[in-house]
Amino acid sequence: MRLYIGLVHYPVYNKNNQTIASAITTIDLHDIARVARTYDVKRFFVITPLKDQQVLAERVKKHWILGYGAQYNSLRKEALELVTIVSYLESAIDDIADLEGELPLLIATDASIQKNRNISYEQARTLIQDGRVVILIFGTAWGLDEVIINHADYVLAPILGRAGYNHLSVRTAAGIILDRLVGS
Amino acid sequence: MRLYIGLVHYPVYNKNNQTIASAITTIDLHDIARVARTYDVKRFFVITPLKDQQVLAERVKKHWILGYGAQYNSLRKEALELVTIVSYLESAIDDIADLEGELPLLIATDASIQKNRNISYEQARTLIQDGRVVILIFGTAWGLDEVIINHADYVLAPILGRAGYNHLSVRTAAGIILDRLVGS
Image (cartoon, rainbow over all chains, first blue to last red; front, top):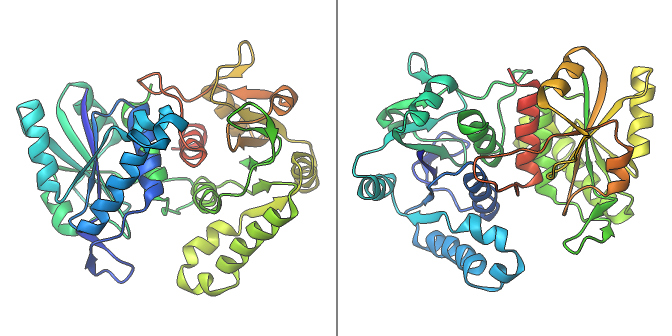
């Protein structure tokens, strides 16, 4: 399996549909790193161009990998070791190309239905199981900017529950999506 | 569907395997309430005997249902309206018996394998789809005390990923489990 994930903080939408760079939510790093470790994802890219936010993310990572956190909870260390902080999605794609010797397929996630562009969970599962190099990306705040959605090779179908309510946290959505795509 | 969920703060284990009452994590209330709303769960019981923690949970709930939060984000209101704060698991079971006219089946979740006691996701899915009244409970901190595990009608099989790592946050685990049990 050659699966990577990315959490995008820029460009994303705010509540008023404006393009912004969102702040890091440290609990996202913990929860999604644990999901990545559970489902054998190769790297979890935290993507933000804001230098102070990169410093914050690095500090969280170091505390748990090298600092007191590593002694306190070595299981958290195993998860946070997967975190790689980069400025732009392009940098993550370049890193993957270097590691794998080929460009990854870019699969975006979105809470709304993208007409004629959605790939099903089964189709995405097959791509991953066939050994394709894939980066699956999640948006923070009110979701990925359409520049990224349009740039993606595929857009994964949204999680539809039973009640027409589609407003999970990105932490929860990442867990459910990874379980659907690569869970046993 | 007559499905209820509960988040148990007592009795649970701490890191040293001692029975404790854990503190409320407010993000658990938000994330799990959104999961409950997504998957059409009838109520989300937050279970803690600690009065100050009940006050905290009530304050979070009120802010989003009646306070400024309700205007700011009505979708969060819809989710947090499902939250009911009670002192003990028995109180949640009594509430459900009053509402449904019968006692619920108690299904516990646990990160470790309970030999000879585990129910599969398929079996649990069938019970729920057959219209049985069910309360599914999640432990905070290092998991549900064995007193509760032993008292349960069933213990759901743990989430096994692909890497032998089984340390998701309870927020993420709740999302994945509900998706497996009642997702489409």
